[in-house]
Amino acid sequence: MVEAVKENLCINKIVGSKTFQINVQGDTIIPDTKPDILSEISANGNVCIYKKEVMEDKIRLDGNVNIYLMYLADTEEGRIRGCSSTIDFTEILDFPGVNPKMVLDENIEIKKIECKVLNGRKVSFNVFLEVNVNVSSNENEEIVKEINNVDDIQLQITPLQMNSLVGQNSSKAYAKESVIIENTDTIAEILNTDFNIINKDTKVSYNKVLAKADISVKILYLTDEGRLKKVEETIPVMGFIDVIGVSEDNLCDVKYKLKNIVVKPNSKEEHSIYVEIELEIFCNVYENKDIDIIQDMYSPSKNLSFEETKVSTLINMKNSNDTINVRDRVQLDDIDHTNICDVSVTPTVTEKNVLDGRVRVSGELNLNFVLSNNNEDDLTTLERSIPFDFTEEIEGLNTESKVNIEIVPRTQEFLIDNMDIEVKTDLEVSINSYNLETVSVIDNIQELEENNENPYSMVIYFVKPGDTLWRIAKKYKSTIKDIVRVNNIENPDNLVVGTQLFIPKCSVCRT
Image (cartoon, rainbow, N blue to C red; front, top):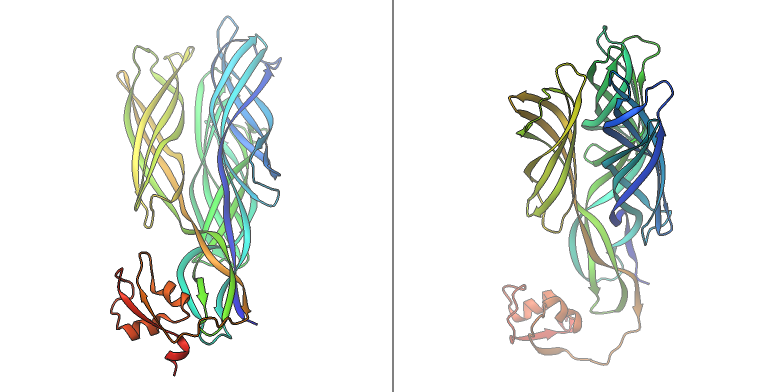
């Protein structure tokens, strides 16, 4: 009986990645307390996923889109007004090969909101969402690392540094804040909100991962006097995720997901807006593990058999963070509105080229301006795009690496200069990269009855194309060491085709 010592590895396998386009539709009725709508000015929103599920060959997403509509009221004054609406959705998407035991990671964003006024009291919304989905499975693999009771065992070993999964978990976190506005303002309604998660950081302590970040909040509101005002605030948020066995030298891959958002005038504190954000924080923890993979074996004195299996694993995983600066100008053309009321900023990656040691990224900064005249009684919107590109140096990256990129606005500044708008935006870039490595490993080792059909003591062999000393030694039940010694080979890795080799049988070599 062959005694094999095994090592257990937890491998996080990427089952598949897909991008889905989702169309969410819904109608909203203008409340009786608000005037009729004459025409829409702009529609913005944010999307939350509050439930997700992996099913057999499908995935399910349950969420909602919170939409803020700014419109021109059908009144003599033609005042600017606003209303909000929440559209729930459930999407069941085909994903062959997945099952309920697997883990779903999604990233969803609004690409476009179309608004159609059906009548003075009813508006129809058509929201286009893009969902990037990764499905993974966590599997325990037993790898043979030693064979103890075969004295002359010959092993072909390949060293591998892999990212073994220590554990994964999630935790909910809440950010609650009263955002103070000017004490002369009384809020009539919220016209738009914008949220970005920035300044992400992690710390490890006592089987826990502390995830910290800031939520950048921007709120556009309308006062009772009909003035458009904007307030910005940074709200800290943190959560503790339990992961048994985590240590400081582990790699923590943390993702933040919006679950629910509440923004409303504060009923308990005058001149403030109550903001409550529910987040779910997901964390995968990996350790760099050096292992020796036994890919082939034999014994000169015993007749051994084994099974060969394929194992896929993650290697060379890295998280990289950087800040890029976008500086440009956009033209107003012949628009005579000179006040910037609000700007929605959406970065989009259009192309990425993964090269050895670096990744080149090209994208667009999509800007949606809301502009007013001096009296703030007339608004117009302006859409512009600014190209950006950058190169990130990442050690160990190669053309086969998988690269995920997340870009969020960090700081923004927009100034009107004559007929141009000067744009100053800093973008926070997070890059997760890894490689998928598939290796052959041995398993189910057995000793068979010895076959003595070839009782030779020495074989003369001529090197053929593709030969290695390992293959020759295994075929004739010799050893690389003995072949090198008998033939005075200086470089075992450089065999010349046609070279004559004397192949000693191991039993003879030991005499």
